Length: 161
Image (tube, rainbow, N blue to C red):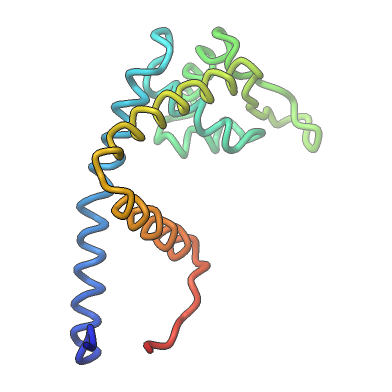
């Protein structure tokens, strides 16, 4: 049995796929954010936690880059980083390439804090996913791997068989 009879049905299916991704990803992100929020240290605000997460993934970024990522002004981002530095979660260092530039780095404590929150979040998400059958979890895993590859631009065109 052929899944698609024409290019039009392929386009409709692609549009439906895009719509499902757009509807599902916000729910997934809310679930992850809620779990992470519950696990983060109390002294850390949600914006500070988001900043720490980004710093761990992009160590050595500038304050301007962090502000742009978080959608904050430079003064607001600077105040946010002050809190991270105060709690020994990040440092401000002079760039080795340009002494006028300050780079932001997570501390060992900051990385460990984020790792602990991510582990607790993964455990909570794993418990939720346990409601799906092994076959369904395999399908979800395969679909997300395809989605990740496509969104990163690594998907190669394949001829319909």
